[in-house]
Length: 73
Image: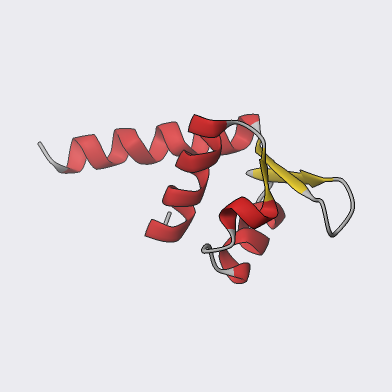
């Protein structure tokens, strides 16, 4: 998981559902990749779309954090 993916998933985990405009500083390829991997879902119209982290996204975050913790030992 790259830094952009980690930051975006962490933000959504912390804040809950967020409008796409709230994540406007995230790059479109990162957001698209997270949706394609099933880590983030979007719903609503394209102008008022909302993003939310999925169970798969939470699991990916947990794995990443475990791997990072193991690597720092």
